[in-house]
Image 1 (cartoon, helix red, strand yellow):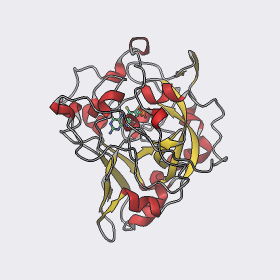
Image 2 (image 1 turned 30 degrees about the vertical axis):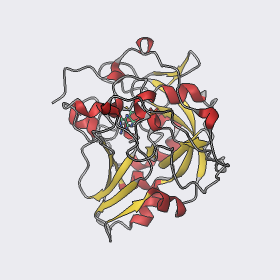
Image 3 (image 1 turned 60 degrees about the horizontal axis):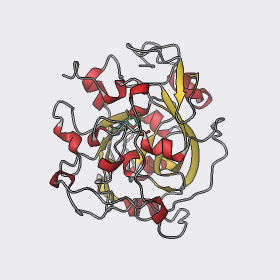
Image 4 (image 1 turned 135 degrees about the vertical axis):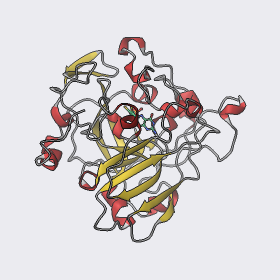
Length: 325
Ligand code: MTE
């Protein structure tokens, strides 16, 4: 059980220095793809192994634009792209905030997602095939980490509800569990055996069907970079960022509340619900304010990260639950 080791996200923000981004953005290829993206960020399968010692070549992202959904106005400036894509938590690639180089080893094409558990027909669906069955849109969401930093990101993706519909879950399924890639050949963090790999997360079915819950396949008009969870990640904007699982390979429908990665490590600090609330401090720090990345500015945290009108009613009957840790 993890208790003594200090996690990267517990480093004081002042001590976490983002590195320069190494993405080969000038080398972007292809025409603006609209909703027609087929392959995610370009990293050919089996190109090389990070553990073999060679440095991964720069990642080439593809343009990926979709109409912006004006319903979700973030009410704040979009975070500078470089800031947002070079200050990350992706423990499979290391505990530092600067995992861009390491994450370049991620093999995100081809990619398959397993639909499992309580569904009519368990099956596997290729990422390209999935992209043909959904309609992409852009949503600008506030993104709030439990560490008290925040950013505002233009994500490109589609509602998780669309995938749930394709999956045809049984009526008895009440939770969705997400499992993310755990590839020992390319992910050096997996050597840290005290972590309960693979990274998993979960939502109630009601949360999964909420209109805000999004599967992101792009950001800033391009395919999602490896360090941000290529080729597909969850984006749950009213919850602390650790709920937003990156590089999803399995979506399982279940009637048991999933035990997430961070819950297994420290349930008292990183619980199942993890909804943002300025008045409920993390056991070791305040959540009253958040630091807006790239601005030097701190602003008051908002309950439900400001998305209460969309989500608060889901929790009205859960008065006995630890909703905000
Ligand atoms: N997903 C995986 N697979 N591995 C991780 O380490 N970190 C989580 C979440 N999803 C994580 C993950 C945490 S703690 C946060 S705050 C967000 O991703 C950070 O997303 P970002 O780096 O794109 O800002």
